[in-house]
Length: 463
Image (cartoon, rainbow, N blue to C red):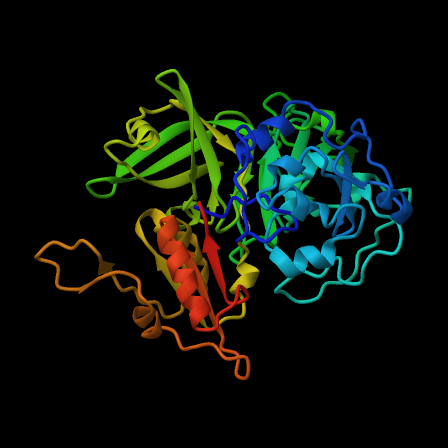
């Protein structure tokens, strides 16, 4: 249910109708087709401002965002805000423009296959400021030549015992890990693929320890004991190997159905595990795309995992979904009727939400309708760490006669019973998350704006 907008500079409220074959999934497929979207042949290039300025036309467009230059020529027709809106940032450092319009969009994931290389001079002062969070120290956009490109985008530590090796990876974005081939460990960290050459093979699956504060540091513990040689200490340090664009893995992974549990008359939890030696960490509020061939047609649906609520903080590689099965729902009825070990294709996670949006609020209001509850599950779990007060109120629009609670629809008067009007003179520590059918989300957003709330104080998950 998360916002799937691929906009890089345009206003998400001013979306245009895209041509057939230009959806987000079509863009992901194009990126995984092997086409050289960056135009560099897979070799990163250092870009000067003068070079950037020469690429500002519809047929040849580059853009700089937060210190990196992307070739957006092929992406223009996929941009939900329209070609002209995105061309406003062509040929320039558009970081400030991007931060002003929709800084929450995960452009690194959307444009990762378009990366030309770093901008090497005169980077804007706020390029590496994280919107809504504390200021970070400015990164060096022109690193020493002794470092590999991978070392400039990843921070990690590792420790070892006789039987185990543990990697500690520091994140800002989704994490993907795979142990294929067995003597290499691959990882998608902060939008960039890296890999380590390992002194010995590893046993799969790993033990993944997730942070309680969303994406800060993830612990990946792998068994390195060998049946033939027994336990041993590595004498060599794992070293990073650059990954070219042509070597990027496919955006979809195969998962098998491990368990389906019926929660009520039409809601199920579906637990999936990766078939190969891979693991994706899906950040809070991000969604994945599942696809399958049903009755001869490829069908795709978005789902937001609820993994952290129903699993321990340390668990094998897998994903848990909450699925409402509709009688006439082609995909939901198919998914909830699967048998054990049947295969489902799952995309990499995407989304624009970050817990930095709610980190400093004292009152978190979650407004959900129907299946819009799913992204709220992990937000609730995160917000209750450590233990905090939480209350829920159910309001039914189509209640049975036995229902004793509140009835009705979302209205301005209803919101005013739980939210004070916002005033710039006395900013309130309130933050609102909204998810549900499109009409519900749009109506709730309009009421919040009537109460003087801005996008600094609310987030809409849009399907």
